Length: 212
Image (cartoon, rainbow, N blue to C red; front, side, top):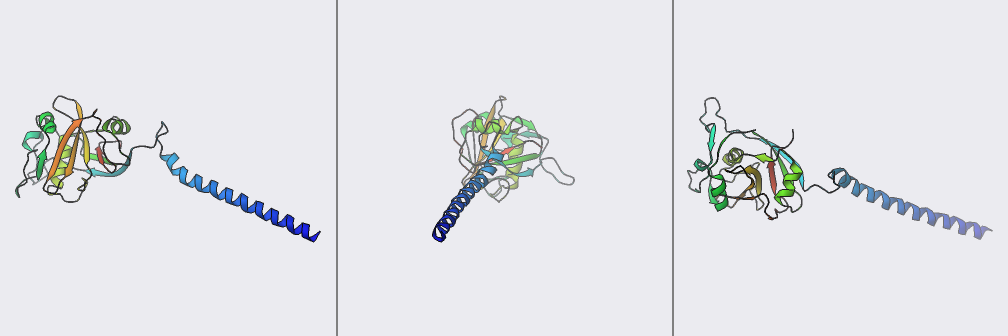
């Protein structure tokens, strides 16, 4: 009887260990999956962009300081120039940007911008849909941020090998993507239609007026 009693106790111990291991696995699965479930979009998919910092940048003239005029004329600002006296060192302007955006004349919009980081490769259409109606910015916003990092200094714009993108309407009123990349000698500025199949890489920084 003593032997039988000992065997029963050992069996119970094994069952407890198996049960505890099973509970531990369930707990680990819940811990890993819970944050992902909370961050999923309404359609059940994980969002491509995650919120980052909020930035403020204004071109309006300040008291006692000569700054930018109220009317923002794109061709007077976006010029290829890497000389020491350049207001912003720009080493390259893409043909599409020059054709579609250099003709724009704007007034400054909302100086408050939200930034997002692309956490998986995606295209402009999907990013714009995730950001919603307030994804649009202006060239004046782009230029304002460039002025703060005219020589590739650190700041809101990334100066590594990943791009910064803005959704901006061109001279014809069509929404497109303006992208900035610091190339070492200066900023490289391009543009593409929002419907292009170009895949933007992980880590791309997206600028939007976003939701307050």
